[in-house]
Amino acid sequence: MDTGLVRPATPPPARVSTEGQTVMIDRASAGLPLPGGTAAPAAPPSQASPAPAAASGESPVPDPGSTARLRSSGPYSAQSASQSQTARLRPPSPQTGPPAPAEPAPTPAEPVRDTTYHLRITESLREQYLQTGTGATLQMAIESSQMALDAVKPGDAQGRALALGTRCVLLRMAYQRDKDPARLAEAISVGRTALSLTGPGDPAYSRHVSNLAGALQEEYARARAPEVLDEALATYRGAASALPAGSPQLAGMLSNIGNVLLTQGLKQQSQPLLTEAVEVAREAVGATDPDAPAFGTRLASLGMALVGHYASCGRPPGELNEAERVLNVALTTLPEAHPMRAQVQEYLSSVSALRAAS
Image (tube, rainbow, N blue to C red; front, side, top):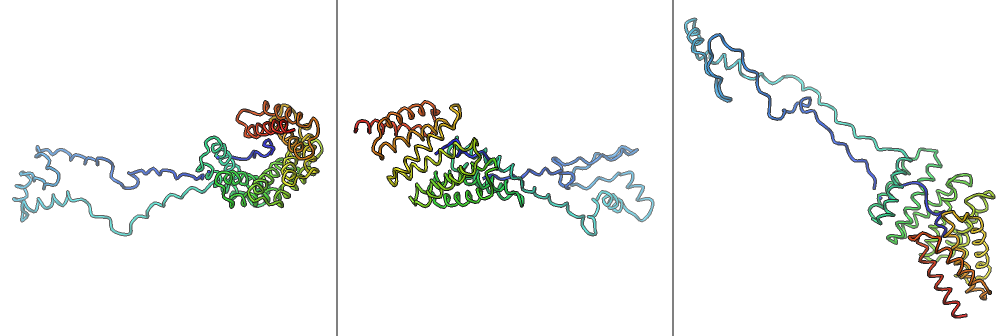
């Protein structure tokens, strides 16, 4: 399949949540004791030299001079003076009346409702998953894509299509990891909806086509249901016919059509389908700039179609040599880590076996 077209551009991969913020409390304004307490202010010095201050928790020692004056002045005793001074030192009574209203609790932060914001996070997580292969990261990306979908404003068809298309890709990746058919079924469902919201004039149109058709081809590989592959082929053909002449997206559509025709032709051993697969693959290569990143994959698709046609259609002379030449060029063009390199090498081995058997 043409990986140059299938790779989604939207956004990045697994669960994204907004962490709670730490609430800083002003202990003084909240009525809490300050660390270490606060020392009481010292009493003003008396004209007569006072006795040393009493330790905390003990009754104060009365001034002997003041006690004598109180004794000689009337019915009051030193005990009355001590009680009066104790009353002055007693802490004030608690405030009576209704309590002061409590400060309102901090309001939780509102969740971010911005589709573009969540799609950026989703794409970042998807890229991270491609680098690490960590299942938790992929799950976070899937949940982030749902947040992007929930944040779409009413009437924003383009934003909804982008969020659905991104989710389609991630769910297909999850299926490839855990082989859960429910993931693939949801990928197909959201892919169909995303494509229905766009048209040929939309910059993301070809991407939505490839996302859906790719998920359908994955389902065909799982269940071998011919009608699923028929839908994938119809999806690609409809997109190719809707694109204007000279569209840069057309070559990718043609290459994908050739791949589906090759699969169908080999399954049915149909010469017409295999012949059309070769013709469409040649057209796709001819419409691709040799410096384009997808040139190697389209060359590889053509070489595979030539091998399939040669093996099933009477072994036309010269076709096997052409297939070998095209596959070797594709192998030198594809990057070292490209996933199609192993498949190209397998087809080159088939060329050698077919040549030995002829």
